[in-house]
Amino acid sequence: MREPTTDHRLQRRQFLTRTGSGLGAISVNGLLNPALYAGTGGDALEEQRGVRHFAPRARRVVFLFMAGGPSHLDLWDPKPQLQARDGSELPPSVRQGQRITTMTRGQKQLLVAASPMRFRQYGESGQVMNEHLPRLGKMADEMAIVRSIHSEPINHDPAVNMIQTGAGRAGRPCIGSWVSWALGSENRNLPDFVVLLSGSKGQPVISRYYHSGFLPSRHQGVQFLSQGDPVLFLSNPKGINQAQRNELIAGINALNRRRLEVVGDPEIEARIDSFELAGRMQTSVPELMDIRREPRHIHEQYGTEPGKVSYANNCLLARRLLERGVRFVQLYQRGWDMHSKIKTRMPEMCRTIDRPTAALIEDLRRRGMLEDTLIVWGGEFGRTTYCQGELVPEFGRDHHPRCFSMWMAGGGIRGGTALGQTDDYGYNIVQDGVHIHDLQATVLHCLGMDHTRLTYRFQGRDQRLTDIGGQVVHRILS
Image (cartoon, rainbow, N blue to C red; front, side, top):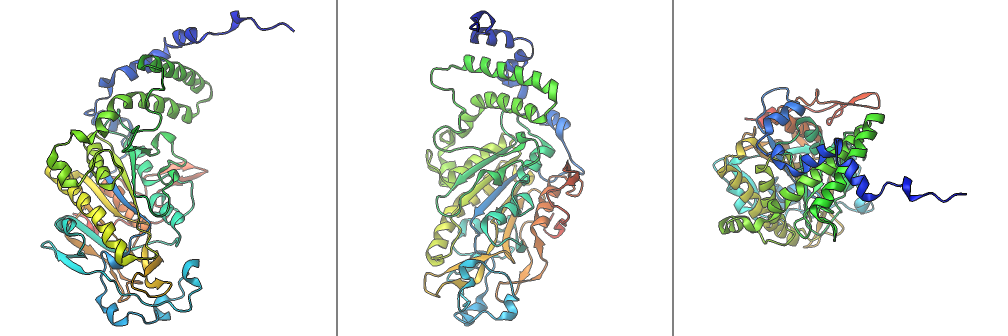
């Protein structure tokens, strides 16, 4: 058998030279000419991928997700009457046969645990919240607190899936991906949807919580890091300069485009877009992520520490992302899964989020961005009225999806309002229940979209974020 000759092999230099022309040249042009994708070109981009059914009140969203399930009873929904019932058995008439987790199912008694926290009224609206949130309290008149959110899953993973994707099972697109797919970006040099993580305790935050599911993969969230390389694999490999990398990407994309012409697979097109976006991000992201460029008073306002991974740093990064045209920014702050030590850990977590969250609201307001930026704060569920284990000074609470609290502020929201009411035990909703699908419908409404008309055909069905449910919560809208 004859050995193949090198005459028929395409050498690397020849490959790059040949594919660098034609379609490859288009890719290089896109990579090397960021001016073609200036952040001020939002109108043109929205004409290409703008799904709006009516005039929006908000252009962008920042979702401050408190992973672990923050206790509504110890933050936003005080029940002083529980002091007199502290240590008593939770009445069966209150529990109503609710399914509970395996962590407390075997307890002989479900003992009522009054909150060890104290509460204060804030603002002209008199919003009631934990006294360890004094700076956020100054923003009370910007906030609409909903004390009657409810869901179904009782464990973290399906509960996070539910609030992010509208379904307890994994594999569906998250809300950020739906918004990216519907509205596109205002800055072609950055992703439509960016994710920032902080906090080291509690349940893991996994990438499928910000995945695009059956939507094109270009709409999945891109995680930015506040330490080291801002985006994984964005920097050039050792020994490869920018020109060489641009040529290589151009060649790969030329092959991808030829394959796309043959098979018409939209995922190939998404891959091309990802390569080209990565090239543009090499220029845009380093400047964006360098929060040291911010003036001293901004660092003092947020409580930031450049170079560290922190919620404060991520709140400042969120503002920088939003002002550069990123459509949806998702922050995950872990540490709220308090199965024990609420008395100690709740004040700690309040101190972690109080200053940066208030600073983000105030900073957006000062820059004229709050009026068209929607802020959402909340976790996957609340916590039980009864304690987990024995009722000791450092008790904890179990998961409780039947009722919990979230708040919204900014574009389209009527600040200084409170909606919903729970019973004397903070266990059941007695007025104005708001399902997770209602919350999602309301977010889309603020962005100018009818959730029943935002659909994507998949497996023979028009799929929706809100599935077959969802009602816009008009009472918290301005």
